[in-house]
Length: 116
Image (cartoon, rainbow, N blue to C red; front, side):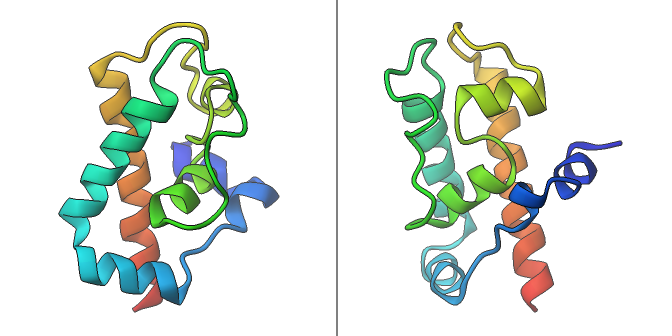
């Protein structure tokens, strides 16, 4: 079972959807800019080994990437450990960061396709 199949079994994860505001934002900024934002958010908010506000650092709304992070369980180190088997307490490698960003972007692309 791939990660998207697993996530779809979670009532909490599967309730997240992109709204009109987020879709418009993506349309204005473009997917390359959204990818850049996802890279920044993962590097700055998720990658460090010790995050003082872990579990509370990702807002539930306000940016398409934030919504995608909750939908894909890439919102905090606890969720990442549970769903993606990447342990807490160590800095994320570049490869791990890329994996998380790729999951976020794939979810966003699937959402955009579902809205069309």
